[in-house]
Length: 523
Image (cartoon, rainbow, N blue to C red; front, side, top):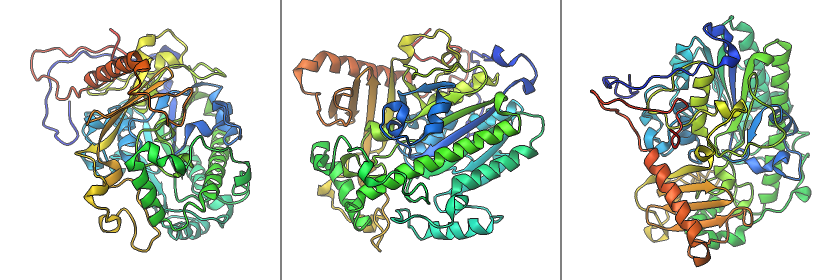
């Protein structure tokens, strides 16, 4: 067994298991389904109507979810693109991958990832869209990258060239007017065309596609009719505002200060930014519908598993903020997750399990008949997706991580945001993932209606998410809730111990025992 940045490791005997699913037959690899992972970047889960949101932002995604299994307690591994995406592909938390920031992606530590296993199982592979992970072009059969500044290949259409030039003028912020060139210039539209053409070229082998949309991440922009679809006047009020920054703490205040410096007039434009974000969601939804219709026309929809997910969320006005940056609030830590396709049970209601982005890789391993690689910390959701019995205790809680380590940087350390690179010297650029916002180490534990936030200094927060979804009333020091607090701390400790990285496993004699679904808390 190999470890990516040290291929000389040789490990001892492990318990091997194969997870071939009866839903697709036994033996021939052509019996297995195509897998399409559609990932949105920075999509806030609770802004969808099926979650109870009053506006119909993603009607097709909602409809598709109910044809399969969807989760309203799904969480990222960390609310930052690089760490989250590496965790999805490896099935490992950032503490194990070593990718705890967007600047450590090349340090990814694992044995095999999703694309390795798919290749071994005879799958043809493709990346269409945003990468921002350790994956590289030489490991994929078809490589067609699109990022926040457009398509990164030379064979663009004329409208693509012009639209990408326009994107470059936004400096990763926003356009407060409708975008030019219509929907045909928008990246998700072009990606659907790209994916459709590639699928036509695929042989009889099954394929794995990561269709990775770089939106509704900033730069916030969209064309008509989406720009005018959700005007500021109809947007629901958030459960919090900039008035709550002091309650949330110094890191949040620093983030707001930097954001105002980097984006001149930011607070004045906040409601318009929210409006554009909602329009971007609908534009993405229409392209999701268009993509699925293409799959149906090609006759492959019925043998294709579609996973729709996001890497993390966006504040979208919570605490007077946009983007992400600090903390582990549900606005940025909770993500949509829905599975549809052969063998997956449909339901109008959300599944009640707590699941993670790290559960995706082992689930796909089981679907395509592959062993779950050693070192994977996620659990297979395949029994849950089929509507089979599963151990409730295994999925009664979930953990999320944040921070690149060290001590917190505070106001007392000085605040030269421009020198550090967090704020552009022209007053237009702002990187919310910076020294001040990402320092330290933090964990959350979500269980039932409760949420525990705990950091390396022993600072604790406890929230009743049913009564306080914006996480403003910290009950950690309230003696009334001491029993709940102790139970949550105990559960977080258990998660932390259970996910200590097993790599490298003992080289000789010891047998490494695992549950066949890679469950952590179930024998």
